[in-house]
Image 1 (spheres, protein in one colour):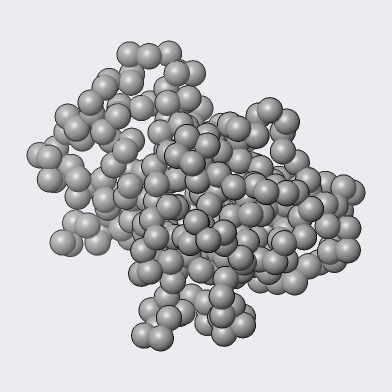
Image 2: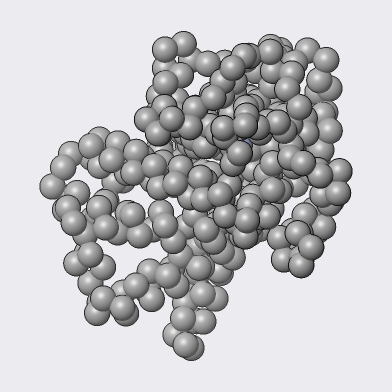
Length: 294
Ligand SMILES: [Zn+2]
Ligand SMILES: [Zn+2]
């Protein structure tokens, strides 16, 4: 147990110092700087929202804009500092102990034999699919839904809503992603950060107040029109748990028949029943999932 705790604390320190290096431009190579990538991307998408708004009457600083901006940095930097790096290093160590040392033994395929671009594509498609599955579960099971409600409490949609989510979602997503990557494994893509950048960019756009569908690519890529319906207040009778669960790819919804985009005015009501009783502030929202009356 001590060893896990030590590893946890060490990972925490390492990630804190890594983040500090990012903020102060000391990361090499310069393009693997997640902190500044998020800042620049957010500004670009925000400018696009201001220049080409879909809902023209929506304020530039819309309802809950600052709450979402806070979530963005809380989830990315403060919380990830603890859960993502530290907890996933501990998970790796735990898995290692379980299989007796060599994690590669779990892999069904040795991805190292393939060119890097294939590794990147497989890594991207695989992690997107398992995240789609987890997202479906977040809507199906009441215990998971009470945490996912934080993300669905957005009433006016804009790019920053992308990262409004309860930190517990990391706990649901990370082990599943981790296990999938281990099973179809031995990934060693040096350029995995490209997948990460791409996912964050599509996620920002999915929530942006911009009418984009990417033409025929809409059947492959999730987009703002499709994702707005994911946040719809009113659900069709035959889809009581929701629809359009896609993260970056929309193919899974088309494949499994969970797609639903009846129109594209952008003016539908967002949220869920009894949203009026849902906490409006950060700490209330963090606490909500644990409440007995949730
Ligand atoms: Zn959802
Ligand atoms: Zn969303």
